[in-house]
Image (cartoon, rainbow, N blue to C red; front, side, top):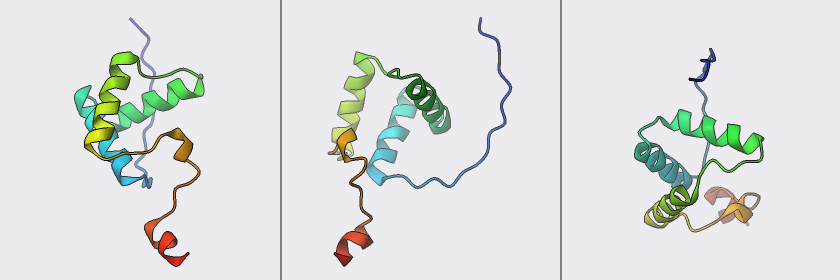
Length: 89
């Protein structure tokens, strides 16, 4: 059994794209964990250059993305524009 690591968690007001948040919340629900626990796992895996999801998890994510209309992928990460900003252009 792995050794427990004491941590101090803080509440944060992170802004995130709405459809992405819906997918993340649903994915956390599928795994019966909190959104915070899911995000911590994703970040820890990413920091080590590992994927936090296997094939079955990626299939669930693809289905959830379709359900919630998340019609973009990682290439979109630097192209997000707030709706207000887009209207000004």
